[in-house]
Each structure stands twice: as structure tokens, then as C-alpha cells.
Image: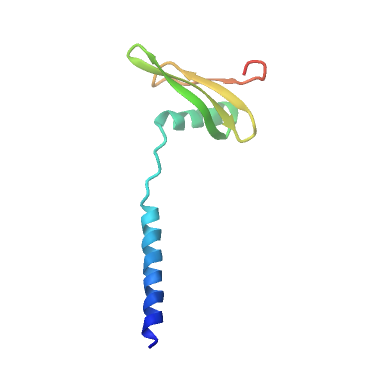
Length: 100
């Protein structure tokens, strides 16, 4: 009568393995391309390791779409960023307490 405990244990192992495989198949939301570009530009120009994008908005500018927002670095600094056209560099300015 040892087969019942073994069968239960085996089914639990199979269920756990199936759950782990299903969890690996979950797709995370893709980062927008502008965020990757902004992260690299912040690192190169401001030695900022991007913590998070605090806020942003897409602004229609004729046939283009501009971008405006604020980011935080892991070291506590905040920067405002803007870009008027899709394939241009961002303008990045330190967010000073009197301005923000």
C-alpha cells in the first residue's frame, strides 16, 4: 500500500514543476524604446543609475510626439527630461528643489 503516498508525492512534484514552467512563460511588459535610450544617456552624461521613471507624458507636436517627464536615480537625485522628436537626444536637467 505504499503506492498511494508515492503517487500523491509524485503528482505534487509534477504539479510544482508545471507551475514553475508556466511562471517562466509569463511575459513582462516590454520597456518602451525611449526608456532604454534615456537610461543609457543618463548613465553616460549624468552618471545616474536610473531607479524609476516618476512621471512622463507624450506631447503631440505636429506629426511627431514629444516626451516630457521626471526620473529618479538610485543615489537620490531627480532629473527632468524632454525630447521634441523621436530620434533626438534627451535634454536632461537636474531637478533643483526650488524648481521642482
